[in-house]
Length: 194
Ligand SMILES: [Zn+2]
Image (tube, rainbow, N blue to C red):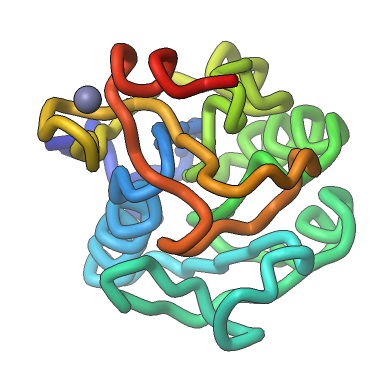
């Protein structure tokens, strides 16, 4: 489990920014882990803001909701740059579904960290073909802390890090629910990949 090396309490005037990436497949608990860290920051009385790409319309519009229904208020934004404009004087910035932002997100999180903010992102690291899902690999590279979380393979019960798409839809941005995807281990993923 991730333990915060420093919660960056306001009493330290020399507070440094930091970038954290939580990545993994679908059903791996990325959003739950993001919400856990943000709630702990709130307990530490830090000012927290949460953003998500407005493309994610699966659930209530102004909330980040995980598969197990943990939820937290969030702001949908159209462009990565909007996060810079809306982050204000917050100490901690959470960004969910970060794989759906364009490459601008990289300079945006660098700027937030340069302002002394702690940035915590959650996102898919691979697409449904098992290919790296940009810009997440680049975000992992610039993060101080990267946590890869794992699902359980729905075919064999091993640890899973791939998202297998059950439909023949070719669009990379297919927002998945249980009926469209299965978490798979490497062997079960490549066995059935056409
Ligand atoms: Zn398996």
